[in-house]
Image (cartoon, rainbow, N blue to C red; front, side, top):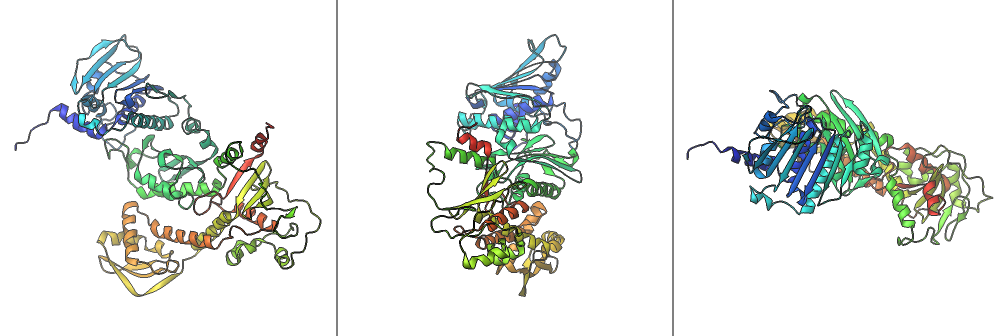
Length: 612
Protein backbone atom coordinates (compact mmCIF):
# COMPACT_ATOMS: atom_id res chain seq x y z
CA UNK A 1 0.00 0.00 0.00
CA UNK A 2 1.39 3.40 -0.99
CA UNK A 3 2.28 5.94 1.70
CA UNK A 4 0.42 9.24 1.44
CA UNK A 5 0.14 12.51 3.31
CA UNK A 6 -2.94 12.68 5.57
CA UNK A 7 -5.32 15.63 5.18
CA UNK A 8 -4.74 18.52 7.58
CA UNK A 9 -8.17 18.10 9.19
CA UNK A 10 -7.53 14.42 9.94
CA UNK A 11 -4.09 15.26 11.35
CA UNK A 12 -5.69 17.78 13.69
CA UNK A 13 -8.36 15.28 14.76
CA UNK A 14 -5.66 12.72 15.58
CA UNK A 15 -3.87 15.37 17.64
CA UNK A 16 -7.16 16.27 19.31
CA UNK A 17 -7.42 12.68 20.54
CA UNK A 18 -4.31 13.28 22.66
CA UNK A 19 -4.71 16.94 23.57
CA UNK A 20 -8.50 17.22 24.02
CA UNK A 21 -9.73 14.23 25.98
CA UNK A 22 -12.85 15.88 27.46
CA UNK A 23 -14.31 19.39 27.99
CA UNK A 24 -12.01 19.91 30.97
CA UNK A 25 -8.99 19.35 28.67
CA UNK A 26 -10.21 22.07 26.32
CA UNK A 27 -10.84 24.40 29.26
CA UNK A 28 -7.30 23.81 30.53
CA UNK A 29 -5.70 24.61 27.18
CA UNK A 30 -7.76 27.77 26.67
CA UNK A 31 -7.17 29.04 30.22
CA UNK A 32 -3.44 28.47 29.75
CA UNK A 33 -3.55 30.59 26.58
CA UNK A 34 -5.31 33.37 28.50
CA UNK A 35 -2.71 33.29 31.28
CA UNK A 36 0.15 33.31 28.78
CA UNK A 37 -1.47 36.38 27.19
CA UNK A 38 -1.10 38.26 30.48
CA UNK A 39 -4.76 38.19 31.55
CA UNK A 40 -5.62 39.39 35.07
CA UNK A 41 -9.29 38.44 34.75
CA UNK A 42 -10.60 35.20 33.24
CA UNK A 43 -14.28 34.25 32.94
CA UNK A 44 -15.32 30.67 32.15
CA UNK A 45 -18.89 29.69 31.23
CA UNK A 46 -20.19 26.20 30.49
CA UNK A 47 -23.40 24.45 29.45
CA UNK A 48 -24.01 20.73 29.33
CA UNK A 49 -20.84 20.08 31.31
CA UNK A 50 -18.84 21.89 28.63
CA UNK A 51 -20.06 19.64 25.82
CA UNK A 52 -22.68 22.08 24.58
CA UNK A 53 -20.79 25.29 25.41
CA UNK A 54 -17.42 26.32 26.73
CA UNK A 55 -16.67 30.02 26.68
CA UNK A 56 -13.42 31.62 27.91
CA UNK A 57 -13.19 35.42 28.17
CA UNK A 58 -9.95 37.15 29.14
CA UNK A 59 -8.51 40.67 29.28
CA UNK A 60 -5.10 39.67 27.98
CA UNK A 61 -3.04 41.17 25.19
CA UNK A 62 -5.37 39.98 22.43
CA UNK A 63 -4.56 39.19 18.78
CA UNK A 64 -4.68 41.11 15.53
CA UNK A 65 -6.06 39.70 12.26
CA UNK A 66 -2.74 38.19 11.10
CA UNK A 67 -2.04 36.51 14.45
CA UNK A 68 -5.61 35.24 14.66
CA UNK A 69 -5.29 33.56 11.28
CA UNK A 70 -2.04 31.85 12.30
CA UNK A 71 -3.29 30.86 15.78
CA UNK A 72 -5.69 28.26 14.35
CA UNK A 73 -2.97 26.61 12.30
CA UNK A 74 -1.12 23.61 13.68
CA UNK A 75 2.23 24.29 15.41
CA UNK A 76 1.96 28.07 15.14
CA UNK A 77 2.89 29.73 18.45
CA UNK A 78 4.47 32.87 19.87
CA UNK A 79 5.83 31.12 22.96
CA UNK A 80 9.04 29.44 21.78
CA UNK A 81 11.55 30.22 19.07
CA UNK A 82 13.80 27.21 18.57
CA UNK A 83 14.56 24.97 21.57
CA UNK A 84 12.58 23.17 24.29
CA UNK A 85 15.12 23.70 27.06
CA UNK A 86 13.91 27.14 28.16
CA UNK A 87 10.10 26.93 28.28
CA UNK A 88 8.68 29.64 30.56
CA UNK A 89 5.04 29.60 29.39
CA UNK A 90 2.20 27.15 30.00
CA UNK A 91 1.58 26.51 26.32
CA UNK A 92 4.22 26.04 23.65
CA UNK A 93 3.12 23.29 21.24
CA UNK A 94 0.69 25.30 19.09
CA UNK A 95 -1.83 22.44 19.00
CA UNK A 96 -4.73 23.49 21.21
CA UNK A 97 -6.79 25.77 18.95
CA UNK A 98 -6.50 23.70 15.74
CA UNK A 99 -7.20 20.50 17.72
CA UNK A 100 -10.33 21.93 19.33
CA UNK A 101 -11.43 23.45 16.00
CA UNK A 102 -11.15 20.09 14.27
CA UNK A 103 -13.76 18.45 16.53
CA UNK A 104 -16.07 21.34 17.47
CA UNK A 105 -17.61 24.63 16.33
CA UNK A 106 -15.26 27.40 17.45
CA UNK A 107 -15.51 31.18 17.28
CA UNK A 108 -12.60 33.35 18.39
CA UNK A 109 -12.98 37.11 18.80
CA UNK A 110 -10.01 39.24 19.83
CA UNK A 111 -8.73 42.81 19.96
CA UNK A 112 -5.35 44.23 20.91
CA UNK A 113 -4.93 47.38 22.96
CA UNK A 114 -5.15 50.49 20.78
CA UNK A 115 -6.79 48.70 17.84
CA UNK A 116 -9.83 50.43 16.37
CA UNK A 117 -11.76 47.17 16.00
CA UNK A 118 -11.49 43.53 16.84
CA UNK A 119 -11.25 40.48 14.59
CA UNK A 120 -13.16 37.22 14.45
CA UNK A 121 -12.47 33.79 13.00
CA UNK A 122 -14.63 30.67 12.92
CA UNK A 123 -13.76 26.98 12.59
CA UNK A 124 -16.31 24.20 12.05
CA UNK A 125 -15.05 20.63 12.20
CA UNK A 126 -11.64 21.71 10.94
CA UNK A 127 -12.92 24.04 8.20
CA UNK A 128 -11.55 27.56 8.76
CA UNK A 129 -13.44 30.65 7.59
CA UNK A 130 -11.65 33.90 6.67
CA UNK A 131 -10.91 36.47 9.38
CA UNK A 132 -13.43 39.32 9.51
CA UNK A 133 -13.83 42.53 11.58
CA UNK A 134 -15.89 42.35 14.76
CA UNK A 135 -16.70 44.47 17.78
CA UNK A 136 -14.72 43.37 20.81
CA UNK A 137 -13.18 44.53 24.05
CA UNK A 138 -9.44 44.25 24.65
CA UNK A 139 -8.55 40.62 25.11
CA UNK A 140 -9.92 37.39 23.64
CA UNK A 141 -13.18 35.46 23.70
CA UNK A 142 -13.08 31.79 22.67
CA UNK A 143 -16.45 30.09 22.31
CA UNK A 144 -16.51 26.32 21.80
CA UNK A 145 -19.85 24.68 20.95
CA UNK A 146 -20.87 21.08 20.29
CA UNK A 147 -17.54 19.59 21.34
CA UNK A 148 -16.76 16.32 19.49
CA UNK A 149 -19.66 16.70 17.05
CA UNK A 150 -17.16 15.89 14.28
CA UNK A 151 -15.93 12.76 16.10
CA UNK A 152 -19.12 11.16 17.53
CA UNK A 153 -17.25 8.11 18.82
CA UNK A 154 -15.50 10.30 21.40
CA UNK A 155 -18.85 11.49 22.77
CA UNK A 156 -19.64 7.93 23.88
CA UNK A 157 -16.66 7.96 26.24
CA UNK A 158 -17.68 11.14 28.05
CA UNK A 159 -19.28 10.96 31.48
CA UNK A 160 -22.49 12.62 32.65
CA UNK A 161 -22.89 16.37 32.33
CA UNK A 162 -22.52 16.70 36.10
CA UNK A 163 -19.23 14.76 36.09
CA UNK A 164 -17.85 16.74 33.14
CA UNK A 165 -18.84 20.02 34.82
CA UNK A 166 -17.05 18.90 37.99
CA UNK A 167 -13.90 18.15 35.96
CA UNK A 168 -13.95 21.67 34.51
CA UNK A 169 -14.34 23.05 38.03
CA UNK A 170 -11.28 21.12 39.16
CA UNK A 171 -9.23 22.56 36.30
CA UNK A 172 -10.27 26.09 37.26
CA UNK A 173 -9.38 25.44 40.91
CA UNK A 174 -5.89 24.24 40.02
CA UNK A 175 -5.31 27.26 37.80
CA UNK A 176 -6.67 29.58 40.48
CA UNK A 177 -4.24 28.19 43.06
CA UNK A 178 -1.33 28.36 40.62
CA UNK A 179 -1.99 32.02 39.80
CA UNK A 180 -3.40 33.81 42.88
CA UNK A 181 -3.12 37.24 41.26
CA UNK A 182 -5.71 36.41 38.57
CA UNK A 183 -9.45 36.76 39.14
CA UNK A 184 -11.37 33.66 38.01
CA UNK A 185 -15.13 33.42 37.52
CA UNK A 186 -16.83 30.13 36.62
CA UNK A 187 -20.54 30.20 35.73
CA UNK A 188 -23.15 28.55 33.51
CA UNK A 189 -26.51 26.87 33.25
CA UNK A 190 -25.09 23.64 34.68
CA UNK A 191 -23.53 25.03 37.84
CA UNK A 192 -23.55 27.53 40.68
CA UNK A 193 -21.34 30.53 40.00
CA UNK A 194 -17.88 30.18 41.51
CA UNK A 195 -15.64 33.22 41.89
CA UNK A 196 -12.05 33.57 43.13
CA UNK A 197 -11.09 37.20 43.68
CA UNK A 198 -7.51 38.19 42.92
CA UNK A 199 -5.30 37.64 45.97
CA UNK A 200 -2.10 39.25 44.71
CA UNK A 201 0.95 37.34 45.93
CA UNK A 202 -0.86 35.86 48.95
CA UNK A 203 -0.85 32.18 48.07
CA UNK A 204 -2.39 31.06 51.34
CA UNK A 205 -5.31 33.46 50.92
CA UNK A 206 -6.05 32.03 47.46
CA UNK A 207 -5.70 28.46 48.76
CA UNK A 208 -8.22 29.29 51.49
CA UNK A 209 -10.61 30.57 48.78
CA UNK A 210 -10.35 27.27 46.93
CA UNK A 211 -9.96 24.67 49.70
CA UNK A 212 -11.72 26.49 52.52
CA UNK A 213 -10.49 28.23 55.64
CA UNK A 214 -9.87 24.90 57.38
CA UNK A 215 -6.73 24.36 55.32
CA UNK A 216 -5.27 27.67 56.47
CA UNK A 217 -5.73 26.60 60.09
CA UNK A 218 -4.16 23.18 59.52
CA UNK A 219 -1.31 24.00 57.13
CA UNK A 220 2.43 23.97 57.74
CA UNK A 221 4.56 26.24 55.58
CA UNK A 222 7.22 24.55 53.45
CA UNK A 223 10.31 26.41 52.31
CA UNK A 224 13.35 24.37 51.30
CA UNK A 225 16.04 24.33 48.66
CA UNK A 226 18.55 21.76 47.47
CA UNK A 227 21.12 22.57 44.84
CA UNK A 228 19.18 24.36 42.05
CA UNK A 229 15.69 23.21 43.06
CA UNK A 230 13.41 25.14 45.44
CA UNK A 231 10.27 23.82 47.14
CA UNK A 232 7.65 26.08 48.71
CA UNK A 233 4.00 25.90 49.67
CA UNK A 234 1.91 24.37 52.43
CA UNK A 235 1.39 20.84 53.72
CA UNK A 236 -1.52 19.86 55.94
CA UNK A 237 -0.92 18.32 59.36
CA UNK A 238 -1.28 14.51 59.11
CA UNK A 239 -4.59 14.42 60.99
CA UNK A 240 -6.06 16.83 58.41
CA UNK A 241 -6.54 14.26 55.64
CA UNK A 242 -9.10 13.32 53.00
CA UNK A 243 -10.62 10.20 51.47
CA UNK A 244 -9.07 10.82 48.04
CA UNK A 245 -6.12 12.61 46.46
CA UNK A 246 -8.19 15.46 44.96
CA UNK A 247 -6.76 17.91 47.51
CA UNK A 248 -3.15 17.41 46.44
CA UNK A 249 -1.97 20.26 44.22
CA UNK A 250 1.51 20.20 42.70
CA UNK A 251 3.08 22.83 40.46
CA UNK A 252 6.37 22.83 38.56
CA UNK A 253 7.55 26.29 37.50
CA UNK A 254 3.96 27.47 37.93
CA UNK A 255 2.53 24.67 35.78
CA UNK A 256 -0.16 22.46 37.41
CA UNK A 257 0.95 18.83 37.09
CA UNK A 258 -0.38 15.45 38.17
CA UNK A 259 2.90 13.62 38.00
CA UNK A 260 3.10 10.13 39.50
CA UNK A 261 6.69 10.62 40.65
CA UNK A 262 5.73 13.64 42.73
CA UNK A 263 2.56 12.01 44.06
CA UNK A 264 4.59 8.97 45.10
CA UNK A 265 7.08 11.19 46.92
CA UNK A 266 4.20 12.95 48.69
CA UNK A 267 2.85 9.58 49.89
CA UNK A 268 6.30 8.60 51.12
CA UNK A 269 6.67 11.88 53.03
CA UNK A 270 3.51 11.11 55.03
CA UNK A 271 4.29 7.41 55.54
CA UNK A 272 3.35 6.15 59.03
CA UNK A 273 1.41 9.35 59.73
CA UNK A 274 -1.71 9.09 57.53
CA UNK A 275 -4.06 6.08 57.80
CA UNK A 276 -4.34 3.60 54.96
CA UNK A 277 -6.99 4.75 52.51
CA UNK A 278 -6.63 8.40 53.55
CA UNK A 279 -4.67 11.09 51.70
CA UNK A 280 -2.75 14.13 52.97
CA UNK A 281 -3.67 17.62 51.80
CA UNK A 282 -0.85 19.64 50.27
CA UNK A 283 -0.23 22.55 47.89
CA UNK A 284 3.39 22.65 46.74
CA UNK A 285 5.43 24.60 44.19
CA UNK A 286 8.69 23.32 42.70
CA UNK A 287 10.85 25.97 41.05
CA UNK A 288 13.94 25.21 38.99
CA UNK A 289 15.80 26.14 35.84
CA UNK A 290 13.57 25.11 32.88
CA UNK A 291 16.53 23.19 31.47
CA UNK A 292 16.30 20.79 34.45
CA UNK A 293 12.77 19.63 33.64
CA UNK A 294 11.18 18.27 30.46
CA UNK A 295 7.53 19.36 30.13
CA UNK A 296 7.22 17.92 26.63
CA UNK A 297 6.52 14.38 27.85
CA UNK A 298 2.85 14.27 26.78
CA UNK A 299 0.65 16.64 24.77
CA UNK A 300 -1.54 17.22 27.86
CA UNK A 301 1.57 18.58 29.67
CA UNK A 302 0.43 17.15 33.02
CA UNK A 303 3.45 14.84 33.33
CA UNK A 304 7.02 16.06 33.59
CA UNK A 305 10.44 14.45 33.59
CA UNK A 306 13.25 15.72 35.81
CA UNK A 307 16.92 15.61 34.93
CA UNK A 308 17.63 14.46 38.52
CA UNK A 309 14.47 12.74 39.83
CA UNK A 310 16.24 11.49 42.96
CA UNK A 311 17.13 15.06 43.95
CA UNK A 312 13.53 16.25 43.52
CA UNK A 313 12.09 13.25 45.37
CA UNK A 314 14.56 13.61 48.23
CA UNK A 315 13.88 17.34 48.54
CA UNK A 316 10.11 16.86 48.69
CA UNK A 317 10.21 14.00 51.20
CA UNK A 318 12.89 15.58 53.37
CA UNK A 319 11.28 19.03 53.49
CA UNK A 320 7.84 17.71 54.41
CA UNK A 321 9.16 15.32 57.06
CA UNK A 322 11.25 18.08 58.60
CA UNK A 323 8.21 20.37 58.67
CA UNK A 324 6.06 17.65 60.25
CA UNK A 325 8.68 17.05 62.92
CA UNK A 326 8.86 20.77 63.59
CA UNK A 327 5.18 21.63 63.60
CA UNK A 328 3.12 18.59 62.65
CA UNK A 329 2.30 17.31 66.13
CA UNK A 330 -0.61 19.69 66.63
CA UNK A 331 -4.14 18.38 66.36
CA UNK A 332 -6.32 19.11 63.37
CA UNK A 333 -9.04 21.70 63.96
CA UNK A 334 -11.49 19.31 62.30
CA UNK A 335 -11.33 17.14 65.42
CA UNK A 336 -12.62 20.00 67.55
CA UNK A 337 -15.31 20.74 64.97
CA UNK A 338 -16.47 17.11 65.08
CA UNK A 339 -16.54 17.24 68.86
CA UNK A 340 -18.60 20.43 68.82
CA UNK A 341 -21.04 18.79 66.41
CA UNK A 342 -21.34 15.75 68.64
CA UNK A 343 -22.33 17.94 71.59
CA UNK A 344 -25.09 19.74 69.69
CA UNK A 345 -28.71 18.68 70.31
CA UNK A 346 -29.93 16.02 67.91
CA UNK A 347 -26.46 14.74 67.06
CA UNK A 348 -27.14 11.40 68.69
CA UNK A 349 -24.21 11.71 71.07
CA UNK A 350 -24.71 11.05 74.75
CA UNK A 351 -24.19 13.83 77.24
CA UNK A 352 -20.70 14.56 78.45
CA UNK A 353 -19.84 12.42 81.46
CA UNK A 354 -22.81 10.10 81.09
CA UNK A 355 -22.27 8.61 84.54
CA UNK A 356 -19.10 6.86 83.34
CA UNK A 357 -16.33 6.16 85.79
CA UNK A 358 -13.51 8.65 85.54
CA UNK A 359 -10.57 9.72 87.58
CA UNK A 360 -9.76 13.32 88.47
CA UNK A 361 -6.38 14.16 90.04
CA UNK A 362 -7.96 15.88 93.05
CA UNK A 363 -11.09 13.82 93.38
CA UNK A 364 -9.89 10.24 93.78
CA UNK A 365 -11.28 7.22 91.86
CA UNK A 366 -14.96 6.76 91.18
CA UNK A 367 -16.60 3.31 91.24
CA UNK A 368 -13.89 0.59 91.08
CA UNK A 369 -10.97 3.01 90.94
CA UNK A 370 -8.34 2.90 93.68
CA UNK A 371 -7.28 5.91 95.76
CA UNK A 372 -3.93 7.51 94.94
CA UNK A 373 -1.56 10.14 96.17
CA UNK A 374 -1.29 13.64 94.66
CA UNK A 375 1.28 14.62 92.07
CA UNK A 376 4.86 14.95 93.30
CA UNK A 377 7.49 17.31 91.93
CA UNK A 378 9.95 14.64 90.74
CA UNK A 379 10.62 14.46 87.01
CA UNK A 380 9.65 11.32 85.03
CA UNK A 381 12.33 8.85 84.07
CA UNK A 382 13.84 8.67 80.60
CA UNK A 383 12.28 7.04 77.59
CA UNK A 384 14.92 4.34 77.36
CA UNK A 385 13.52 2.85 80.56
CA UNK A 386 10.02 3.25 79.17
CA UNK A 387 10.89 1.03 76.22
CA UNK A 388 12.08 -1.71 78.59
CA UNK A 389 9.63 -1.49 81.43
CA UNK A 390 6.46 -0.30 79.71
CA UNK A 391 4.45 2.64 80.80
CA UNK A 392 5.47 2.34 84.47
CA UNK A 393 8.63 4.22 83.55
CA UNK A 394 6.63 7.40 83.15
CA UNK A 395 5.94 7.39 86.88
CA UNK A 396 8.41 8.76 89.43
CA UNK A 397 10.33 6.38 91.76
CA UNK A 398 8.26 7.51 94.72
CA UNK A 399 5.06 7.00 92.77
CA UNK A 400 6.07 3.45 91.81
CA UNK A 401 6.73 2.66 95.48
CA UNK A 402 3.20 3.79 96.27
CA UNK A 403 1.65 1.20 93.96
CA UNK A 404 2.11 -1.56 96.55
CA UNK A 405 0.15 -0.04 99.39
CA UNK A 406 -2.14 2.50 97.60
CA UNK A 407 -3.16 4.14 100.87
CA UNK A 408 -5.96 6.66 100.84
CA UNK A 409 -4.88 10.04 99.51
CA UNK A 410 -4.22 12.87 101.95
CA UNK A 411 -5.90 16.23 101.60
CA UNK A 412 -5.90 17.47 97.99
CA UNK A 413 -2.97 19.66 97.00
CA UNK A 414 -2.77 22.36 94.37
CA UNK A 415 -3.20 21.12 90.82
CA UNK A 416 -0.19 21.43 88.51
CA UNK A 417 -0.27 24.52 86.33
CA UNK A 418 -0.87 24.34 82.59
CA UNK A 419 1.23 27.43 81.87
CA UNK A 420 3.92 26.97 79.25
CA UNK A 421 2.83 23.48 78.18
CA UNK A 422 1.28 22.89 74.76
CA UNK A 423 -0.75 19.94 76.03
CA UNK A 424 -1.38 21.44 79.46
CA UNK A 425 -1.74 19.58 82.75
CA UNK A 426 -3.71 16.38 83.34
CA UNK A 427 -7.01 16.83 85.12
CA UNK A 428 -8.85 13.51 84.65
CA UNK A 429 -8.87 10.09 83.05
CA UNK A 430 -12.11 9.04 81.34
CA UNK A 431 -13.08 5.42 80.68
CA UNK A 432 -9.56 4.38 81.69
CA UNK A 433 -8.24 5.40 78.28
CA UNK A 434 -8.73 9.14 77.67
CA UNK A 435 -6.69 11.77 79.47
CA UNK A 436 -8.31 15.18 79.87
CA UNK A 437 -5.78 18.00 80.25
CA UNK A 438 -6.29 21.70 80.84
CA UNK A 439 -4.33 24.07 78.63
CA UNK A 440 -3.94 27.82 78.96
CA UNK A 441 -6.76 28.46 76.49
CA UNK A 442 -8.84 25.28 76.46
CA UNK A 443 -8.50 21.54 76.95
CA UNK A 444 -7.17 18.49 75.14
CA UNK A 445 -8.38 14.88 75.23
CA UNK A 446 -5.60 12.32 74.72
CA UNK A 447 -5.94 8.68 73.66
CA UNK A 448 -3.35 7.19 76.02
CA UNK A 449 -2.76 3.99 74.03
CA UNK A 450 -2.41 5.75 70.67
CA UNK A 451 -0.10 8.39 72.16
CA UNK A 452 2.20 5.94 73.91
CA UNK A 453 2.27 3.73 70.84
CA UNK A 454 3.65 6.65 68.84
CA UNK A 455 6.26 7.46 71.48
CA UNK A 456 7.54 3.87 71.55
CA UNK A 457 7.62 3.76 67.75
CA UNK A 458 9.62 6.99 67.46
CA UNK A 459 12.07 5.77 70.11
CA UNK A 460 12.57 2.48 68.25
CA UNK A 461 13.00 4.25 64.93
CA UNK A 462 15.52 6.67 66.41
CA UNK A 463 17.47 3.72 67.82
CA UNK A 464 17.55 2.16 64.35
CA UNK A 465 18.84 5.38 62.83
CA UNK A 466 21.58 5.92 65.40
CA UNK A 467 23.35 2.59 64.88
CA UNK A 468 23.54 -0.30 62.44
CA UNK A 469 20.51 -2.54 62.67
CA UNK A 470 21.48 -6.05 63.89
CA UNK A 471 21.71 -8.57 61.08
CA UNK A 472 21.67 -12.34 60.76
CA UNK A 473 24.22 -14.07 58.55
CA UNK A 474 22.97 -16.58 56.00
CA UNK A 475 24.55 -20.03 56.28
CA UNK A 476 24.91 -20.05 52.52
CA UNK A 477 24.93 -16.70 50.68
CA UNK A 478 21.94 -16.36 48.38
CA UNK A 479 22.93 -15.61 44.79
CA UNK A 480 20.49 -13.40 42.90
CA UNK A 481 20.85 -13.17 39.12
CA UNK A 482 20.09 -9.69 37.79
CA UNK A 483 20.80 -7.58 34.72
CA UNK A 484 24.20 -5.99 34.93
CA UNK A 485 22.77 -2.46 35.09
CA UNK A 486 20.63 -3.45 38.13
CA UNK A 487 23.72 -4.83 39.85
CA UNK A 488 25.57 -1.57 39.19
CA UNK A 489 22.76 0.44 40.75
CA UNK A 490 22.51 -1.86 43.78
CA UNK A 491 26.22 -1.56 44.47
CA UNK A 492 25.90 2.23 44.55
CA UNK A 493 23.48 1.81 47.49
CA UNK A 494 25.28 -1.08 49.21
CA UNK A 495 26.82 1.03 51.98
CA UNK A 496 23.54 2.76 52.81
CA UNK A 497 21.60 -0.52 52.90
CA UNK A 498 24.28 -2.11 55.11
CA UNK A 499 23.19 0.23 57.94
CA UNK A 500 19.77 -1.45 57.74
CA UNK A 501 21.35 -4.88 58.25
CA UNK A 502 21.33 -5.92 54.60
CA UNK A 503 24.82 -6.91 53.46
CA UNK A 504 25.55 -8.02 49.91
CA UNK A 505 28.36 -7.92 47.37
CA UNK A 506 28.93 -8.30 43.66
CA UNK A 507 29.10 -11.91 42.43
CA UNK A 508 30.28 -11.61 38.89
CA UNK A 509 28.96 -9.12 36.33
CA UNK A 510 25.29 -10.20 36.53
CA UNK A 511 24.67 -11.41 40.08
CA UNK A 512 24.47 -10.23 43.70
CA UNK A 513 25.47 -12.38 46.70
CA UNK A 514 23.33 -11.65 49.78
CA UNK A 515 25.26 -12.49 52.97
CA UNK A 516 23.24 -10.85 55.79
CA UNK A 517 19.63 -9.77 56.26
CA UNK A 518 18.02 -7.64 59.00
CA UNK A 519 17.49 -9.78 62.10
CA UNK A 520 14.26 -7.91 62.94
CA UNK A 521 12.60 -9.27 59.80
CA UNK A 522 13.28 -12.91 60.63
CA UNK A 523 13.21 -15.31 57.69
CA UNK A 524 12.63 -13.34 54.50
CA UNK A 525 12.79 -13.90 50.77
CA UNK A 526 16.19 -12.30 50.24
CA UNK A 527 16.00 -12.76 46.48
CA UNK A 528 12.60 -11.08 46.29
CA UNK A 529 13.79 -8.21 48.48
CA UNK A 530 16.87 -7.60 46.32
CA UNK A 531 14.81 -7.63 43.13
CA UNK A 532 12.29 -5.22 44.63
CA UNK A 533 15.09 -2.89 45.71
CA UNK A 534 16.64 -3.07 42.24
CA UNK A 535 13.33 -2.10 40.63
CA UNK A 536 12.83 0.75 43.09
CA UNK A 537 16.33 2.14 42.55
CA UNK A 538 15.87 1.96 38.77
CA UNK A 539 12.58 3.85 39.02
CA UNK A 540 13.34 6.44 41.72
CA UNK A 541 17.08 6.15 42.43
CA UNK A 542 16.13 5.40 46.05
CA UNK A 543 15.85 2.25 48.15
CA UNK A 544 12.93 2.96 50.47
CA UNK A 545 11.52 -0.58 50.49
CA UNK A 546 13.76 -1.94 53.25
CA UNK A 547 13.37 1.13 55.45
CA UNK A 548 9.59 0.92 55.00
CA UNK A 549 9.57 -2.75 56.04
CA UNK A 550 11.58 -2.02 59.16
CA UNK A 551 9.39 0.98 60.00
CA UNK A 552 6.30 -1.20 59.62
CA UNK A 553 7.77 -3.81 61.95
CA UNK A 554 8.71 -1.15 64.49
CA UNK A 555 5.15 0.18 64.31
CA UNK A 556 3.75 -3.32 64.96
CA UNK A 557 6.09 -3.94 67.89
CA UNK A 558 5.35 -0.54 69.42
CA UNK A 559 1.61 -1.21 69.18
CA UNK A 560 1.96 -4.41 71.19
CA UNK A 561 4.48 -2.87 73.59
CA UNK A 562 2.45 0.20 74.49
CA UNK A 563 0.21 0.89 77.44
CA UNK A 564 -3.15 -0.64 76.72
CA UNK A 565 -6.57 0.90 76.83
CA UNK A 566 -8.18 0.27 80.22
CA UNK A 567 -4.99 0.96 82.18
CA UNK A 568 -5.58 3.26 85.14
CA UNK A 569 -2.91 5.94 85.26
CA UNK A 570 -1.69 8.07 88.12
CA UNK A 571 -1.40 11.86 87.67
CA UNK A 572 2.39 11.52 87.44
CA UNK A 573 2.06 9.08 84.57
CA UNK A 574 -0.49 11.19 82.73
CA UNK A 575 1.60 14.35 82.95
CA UNK A 576 4.77 12.48 82.03
CA UNK A 577 3.02 11.19 78.91
CA UNK A 578 1.94 14.73 77.97
CA UNK A 579 5.49 16.07 78.40
CA UNK A 580 6.94 13.23 76.31
CA UNK A 581 4.39 13.90 73.56
CA UNK A 582 5.41 17.55 73.45
CA UNK A 583 9.05 16.55 72.97
CA UNK A 584 8.44 13.86 70.33
CA UNK A 585 8.03 14.68 66.61
CA UNK A 586 4.94 13.21 65.03
CA UNK A 587 3.17 12.56 68.32
CA UNK A 588 -0.03 14.16 67.03
CA UNK A 589 -1.00 10.87 65.38
CA UNK A 590 -0.45 7.20 66.11
CA UNK A 591 1.42 4.78 63.84
CA UNK A 592 -1.80 4.11 61.93
CA UNK A 593 -2.34 7.82 61.25
CA UNK A 594 -5.21 8.36 63.68
CA UNK A 595 -5.08 11.44 65.93
CA UNK A 596 -3.64 10.92 69.41
CA UNK A 597 -5.41 13.94 70.85
CA UNK A 598 -8.14 16.46 70.12
CA UNK A 599 -7.95 20.09 71.22
CA UNK A 600 -10.96 22.20 72.17
CA UNK A 601 -10.47 25.93 72.67
CA UNK A 602 -12.13 27.76 75.56
CA UNK A 603 -14.05 29.89 73.07
CA UNK A 604 -15.57 26.71 71.61
CA UNK A 605 -16.57 25.50 75.06
CA UNK A 606 -18.18 28.86 75.84
CA UNK A 607 -20.19 28.67 72.63
CA UNK A 608 -21.60 25.34 73.80
CA UNK A 609 -23.08 27.17 76.78
CA UNK A 610 -24.19 30.19 74.77
CA UNK A 611 -21.69 32.50 76.47
CA UNK A 612 -20.22 33.97 73.29
